[in-house]
Image (tube, rainbow, N blue to C red):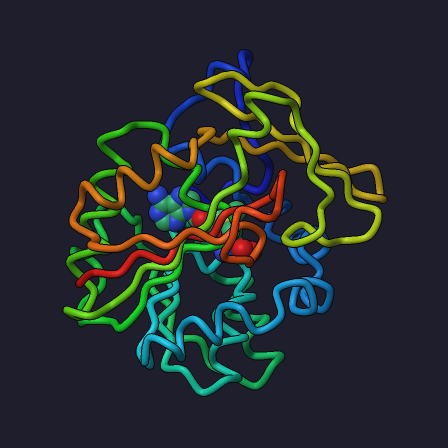
Length: 263
Ligand code: SAM
């Protein structure tokens, strides 16, 4: 487990295409900046009650947040009365989440675990698993993606759901980057933009007002491919929302949210 303070991409940053590398990316300095990037208040406003409503519609009470990050969704769900377990593979992000939750009056039930070995470290059955904030994009190998989804699937109750989101990489790969930053990375004065995009890598730079800068290397998931994977691991129905709307009316959405039903 890495406790590094600063990011390390080595000499050839665009050659870094590894599922384990997130631990070198979500380091202390980025964890300290993450909330400036996502801006909790603006994000809550932009998302509205989409996730709360979706979880309630499916009768979900016991939730596993597998990409807790600094705790935005875990805290939101706790304040709505859900029973939440908060997982992340980065100790720096998880400890930030714990601090944030404490400030909101909650003691987070956390567990440091990697999605690919979830069942080894986390026990129990959940009504819903959430994997949000464009997190699944950190897995670079097809096998890792299948393994992680299979782990999620097996931890869900028979009628459970997986709520998983992703950036609209199709738009980025086919037409170039157009994000309006409307939904997820809502921080004022923070610039998030791609530095390099090809079919195997989307490398983003995040620039902050104080001059600091971070990178994330991500695998650009195509929507059709992602839906196919969800079906392959056994999810019976996958409904995809474009920027929180269930329609194709949004012409060039920033994000897709997939709601995958186990039965
Ligand atoms: N969900 C949060 C949000 O929306 O603000 C955090 C999103 S952040 C983009 C992705 C998170 O996924 C990071 O905290 C990272 O440590 C975690 N992560 C990436 N790959 C992981 C893996 N294989 N296992 C567990 N956590 C992982």
